[in-house]
Image (cartoon, rainbow, N blue to C red; front, side, top):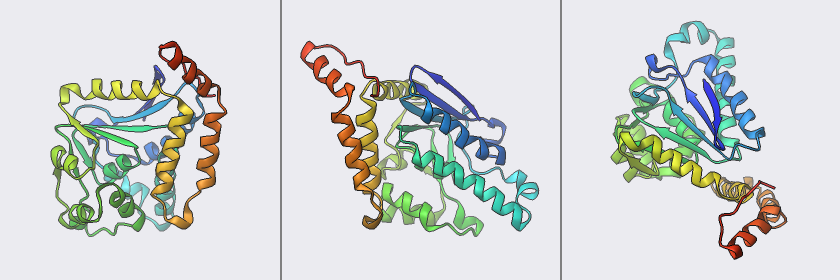
Length: 257
């Protein structure tokens, strides 16, 4: 995994291009550490995850190491614990998370992209879950997450057919926010990230929390937490700065407090 911060944006890259950025055990372990560092850095307003090279976002788990890392019951538990921790870190990041996708976004790669708040795909994107061709069982949590984004019918088509869908098809079903030409992908994502980074961080955080709670089962929703975040917005210096900037007809300078 590669990570760096640039102009308020934390960049995290899946860096195994020779294997289409298949995720190894060590990569799973690194993800929570990177996300924690971005979460703690007040200078990071947005996080973007991408795949190294020009062939793939993430093509799934690195199957080549399964014999060594997942051949015993104990090894399977350790491996799945690392994978679960990585997904949890991505899903619970309070800052906006963008997936910049080109090429393969397959299986576990698609699952990783679903943790993002926004998915921007190049027009060469390919999406799919091949579980039905491999005889794999797919848990309720992952299917529910996909269903919340594309709806029940498209979720069934993705799993039943196990085929690859083009970026255009992914856009039609709402799996990605937008599709852009390959040559414009990075520029488009940078512009989007910069736009979000320039807005009030507390407002963006509260909005993300509200939407995420809305996707939970009613009995699991923590609406008090959302209300607290909204109250923090109105009590913040950024609220004063936003009003002042509006009256003075200038861009606001938000500080996240």
